[in-house]
Length: 62
Image 1 (cartoon, helix red, strand yellow):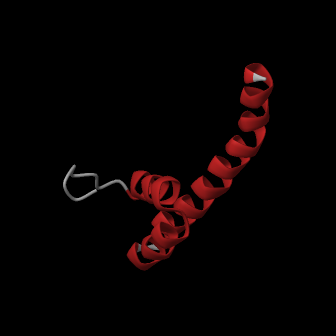
Image 2 (image 1 turned 60 degrees about the vertical axis):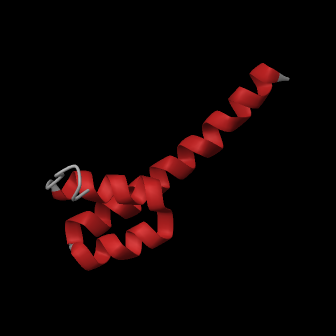
Image 3 (image 1 turned 180 degrees about the horizontal axis):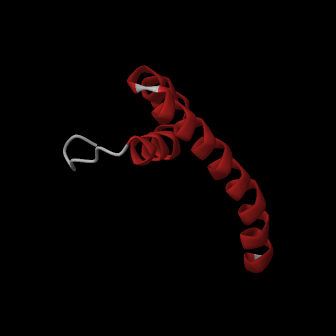
């Protein structure tokens, strides 16, 4: 995030939560409330998307 110059707290939290899961969320909590909240939310959304989309993909392949 530093390398790319991303300063927005929401973007930081979403990126860390989606890419790093629990480790990223714990680090995001250290950075701030907004980053931690967005990180936790993005883990949940990514998990739901995975659970809902994978069966559809498997159904199309099978």
